[in-house]
Image (spheres, rainbow, N blue to C red):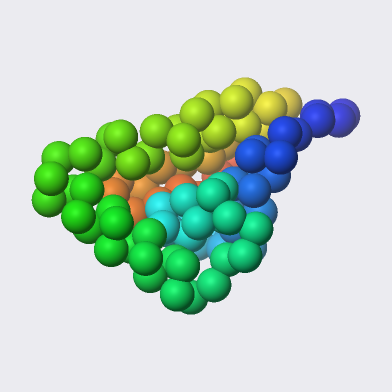
Length: 100
Protein backbone atom coordinates (compact mmCIF):
# COMPACT_ATOMS: atom_id res chain seq x y z
CA UNK A 1 0.00 0.00 0.00
CA UNK A 2 1.20 3.51 -0.77
CA UNK A 3 0.37 6.98 0.45
CA UNK A 4 1.69 10.23 -0.86
CA UNK A 5 2.74 12.71 1.82
CA UNK A 6 2.93 16.48 1.51
CA UNK A 7 6.08 18.38 2.44
CA UNK A 8 4.54 19.45 5.76
CA UNK A 9 3.46 15.90 6.54
CA UNK A 10 7.01 14.65 5.90
CA UNK A 11 8.41 17.42 8.09
CA UNK A 12 6.14 16.33 10.94
CA UNK A 13 6.43 12.55 10.63
CA UNK A 14 10.25 12.55 10.40
CA UNK A 15 10.94 13.69 13.99
CA UNK A 16 8.13 11.44 15.26
CA UNK A 17 9.77 8.44 13.58
CA UNK A 18 13.19 9.52 14.86
CA UNK A 19 11.87 9.62 18.42
CA UNK A 20 10.04 6.28 18.23
CA UNK A 21 9.18 4.54 20.56
CA UNK A 22 9.23 7.73 22.62
CA UNK A 23 7.39 10.96 21.90
CA UNK A 24 8.65 13.93 19.92
CA UNK A 25 8.21 17.24 21.81
CA UNK A 26 5.99 19.94 20.31
CA UNK A 27 8.92 22.36 20.05
CA UNK A 28 10.82 19.86 17.88
CA UNK A 29 7.79 19.24 15.67
CA UNK A 30 7.11 22.95 15.23
CA UNK A 31 10.75 23.65 14.44
CA UNK A 32 10.81 20.93 11.77
CA UNK A 33 7.56 22.25 10.34
CA UNK A 34 8.73 25.85 10.16
CA UNK A 35 12.39 25.53 9.16
CA UNK A 36 14.79 23.60 6.97
CA UNK A 37 17.60 24.24 9.47
CA UNK A 38 16.68 22.62 12.77
CA UNK A 39 19.16 23.18 15.58
CA UNK A 40 19.31 23.02 19.35
CA UNK A 41 19.08 26.83 19.41
CA UNK A 42 15.97 26.98 17.23
CA UNK A 43 14.32 24.21 19.25
CA UNK A 44 15.07 26.15 22.46
CA UNK A 45 13.45 29.23 20.91
CA UNK A 46 10.32 27.21 20.16
CA UNK A 47 10.33 25.89 23.70
CA UNK A 48 10.42 29.45 25.07
CA UNK A 49 7.74 30.52 22.62
CA UNK A 50 5.45 27.69 23.74
CA UNK A 51 6.05 28.45 27.41
CA UNK A 52 5.11 32.07 26.78
CA UNK A 53 2.04 31.02 24.79
CA UNK A 54 0.96 28.84 27.68
CA UNK A 55 1.27 31.78 30.10
CA UNK A 56 -0.64 34.10 27.74
CA UNK A 57 -3.34 31.58 26.86
CA UNK A 58 -2.39 31.36 23.17
CA UNK A 59 -1.19 27.74 23.26
CA UNK A 60 -3.82 26.50 20.78
CA UNK A 61 -2.95 29.32 18.38
CA UNK A 62 0.75 28.40 18.40
CA UNK A 63 -0.04 24.74 17.71
CA UNK A 64 -2.51 25.43 14.88
CA UNK A 65 -0.05 24.79 11.97
CA UNK A 66 1.05 21.54 13.60
CA UNK A 67 -2.53 20.40 14.24
CA UNK A 68 -3.34 21.05 10.57
CA UNK A 69 -0.43 18.91 9.37
CA UNK A 70 -1.23 16.17 11.90
CA UNK A 71 -4.85 16.02 10.83
CA UNK A 72 -4.09 15.11 7.24
CA UNK A 73 -1.20 12.85 8.27
CA UNK A 74 -3.38 10.83 10.67
CA UNK A 75 -5.83 9.76 7.99
CA UNK A 76 -2.98 8.58 5.76
CA UNK A 77 -1.30 6.64 8.56
CA UNK A 78 -4.53 4.77 9.34
CA UNK A 79 -3.99 2.83 6.10
CA UNK A 80 -0.87 1.38 7.73
CA UNK A 81 -2.65 0.69 11.04
CA UNK A 82 -0.73 3.55 12.68
CA UNK A 83 -1.86 6.52 14.74
CA UNK A 84 -0.24 9.67 16.04
CA UNK A 85 -1.07 10.12 19.69
CA UNK A 86 -0.92 13.49 21.46
CA UNK A 87 0.75 13.61 24.83
CA UNK A 88 -0.88 16.52 26.60
CA UNK A 89 1.26 19.66 26.49
CA UNK A 90 4.34 17.60 25.59
CA UNK A 91 4.31 16.21 22.05
CA UNK A 92 3.29 13.35 19.79
CA UNK A 93 4.18 9.70 19.42
CA UNK A 94 3.52 6.97 16.92
CA UNK A 95 1.34 4.06 18.01
CA UNK A 96 -0.38 1.08 16.46
CA UNK A 97 -4.14 1.03 15.96
CA UNK A 98 -4.29 -2.72 16.49
CA UNK A 99 -4.69 -4.02 19.99
CA UNK A 100 -2.01 -6.70 19.85
